[in-house]
Length: 316
Ligand code: UTP
Image 1: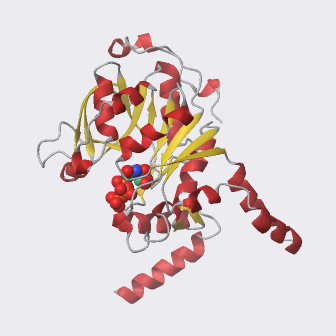
Image 2: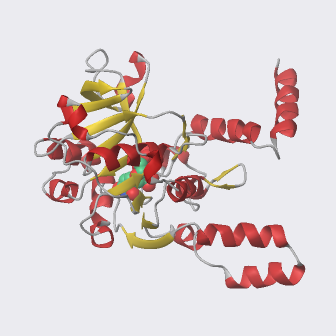
Image 3: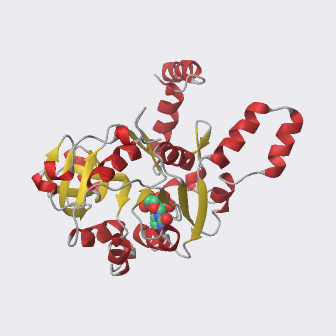
């Protein structure tokens, strides 16, 4: 849990660049998980199984994000799902028959694992009737979020922040300054055309004030190499901004366009988080997550190392 002690000392006014930030905000309690996309990059695996439910080591991709939310102090998760993706909700629900069976068989480890998933956070869900974009998905969560700042997790990004979850790093900045915060990472110049890229004014220690945002800039035109990754803290004004956002790239309502509109009326910050990101929406990122997280898990580490050494020997 995030405690007041974990909020850095000082106030927004220490930084002239942030003088117009509203200042301290108590705590982020609710997170939106948009999970209604088509997952075309992961076909055919994602044809009948949502990509968010594909297994990394021993749990579905989306569970990593929900665990990160819970350890960052978030109490309530709003899932944005779609037809055919009911298994996501089921995964975070109690499973009476399975629990009774595991109990009868004396499978205490299995029972604890099943119960733990259902007790991480309170879950509510809303359906996106058509995949009209990430911004549209976030807007659909408005009635369940209400008028408070909230977190957004793109569930196919697994973020390993070690002992300091990436969302906790963002919510600390929000607790201090009270404005929206976007997670960013520096990417090599040749990779900027794959991401939303920020034009910023640096504030201090990896914290920046966002000046402009460009979605997938043409090679050589990016204003920086700070790329937007899958974690955000947003003020509720983003809902108004999204409501007046027209469909952009790919005929979808983009979250980036909503945040660009927000920039006209309030400050938006970007934080270079400390941690490692796995893009589980792409094949190689998904594979890398499985390998690296299995290596990091004491239960699977030794066997994974042996397996990799053997596989490499045979591939040479
Ligand atoms: P992505 O662009 O990574 O997901 O969106 P996608 O569209 O499912 O993937 P591809 O490109 O076809 O493989 C990031 C997150 O936003 C959600 C997705 O489910 C994913 O978790 N999303 C995207 C929605 O909820 N609704 C949408 O209309 C689009």
